[in-house]
Length: 150
Image 1: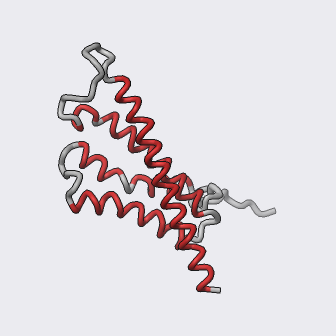
Image 2: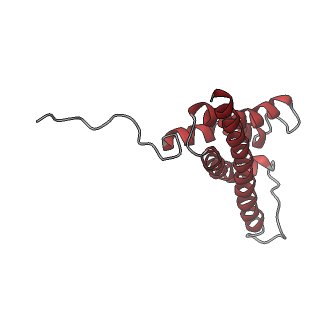
Image 3: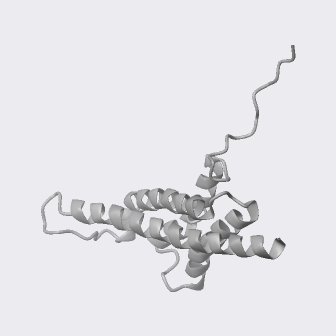
């Protein structure tokens, strides 16, 4: 009887990548979030655009090159994971992002709670939508690649 050691490879998620790879791909978007929230780069700076669009291009390319079973779902999930990272980072850097003057509804101690909650929902929605659009692009690109290689 032969004893086989458990596989050393990370377990696949059914999305074409192990979970840690999905997290790594999503994390590619964090540098822009951090640099923007800390006012190191501004919104319209070319580096901001590269750091915003570059990760999305990598998500699409990775899904197409890896030939994941469902590029739309895979990239959508990457977008959602990025959303969790985005809203967490925004919450952690809230004071710095607003340079000590965060949005508030009134003067009460809880005046910033509603804007913070709104930021959670808007960040998650935007990131999921971004993942969906990139997923559609990856799906289309993968379809074209399959047809041209057939």
